[in-house]
Length: 256
Image 1 (cartoon, rainbow, N blue to C red):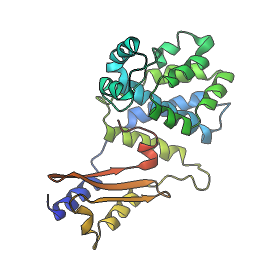
Image 2 (cartoon, one colour; image 1 turned 180 degrees about the vertical axis):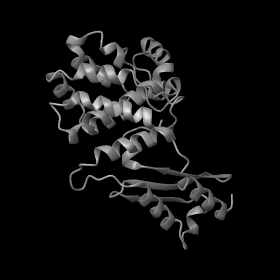
Image 3 (cartoon, helix red, strand yellow; image 1 turned 60 degrees about the vertical axis):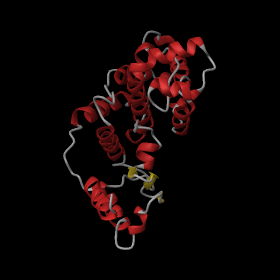
């Protein structure tokens, strides 16, 4: 593909404002936050809702192959991660027999079982959850009798990638971030889509044609807006341009 065609394709993707209806999903998830009233101030709802959204997304993605993963683990407890990735169909897995729904069967031990369930994920997912410091929120919700209700509500949210693709999931997460940032503290603000578009236009402005050269890898990271734009040509015959919201998608793991 010619450089100019690549630039035009890039702009078309970025400036595509085709409406994506996320009202139902966002309102459903946002409504779960009301269960946190009392022990949590509204600006702290995100400490629970964001990790739970991620966990549920992963769970829904893995649901169809979960039994296959469990069968392989039962025959070989030390089976390599790469094998389980192939079985699960993703570059992550969960080898626990628990699920959000099954956690409800033992309300007395839901906090302990929830932690055990999270430990069943592959290390890359556990790293994401650890970065969000979610374990302490499990303890807090359990102490204030909020954990069961939150787990129950999220177990009923359908975030299956076959129903909600990565684009729609990105919009859902973006809207949640925006809502949680309305009363944000200094340095913790939501960056509007229009600002990101301007950044991309600047990146593709005059003098940037070389980023489309064969085998060229260009990485631009601005932590203030948390967007990474990466142009990566892995093969001579094709070029791919991937735009990820670092903090919003990669860090939180919503792109599956």
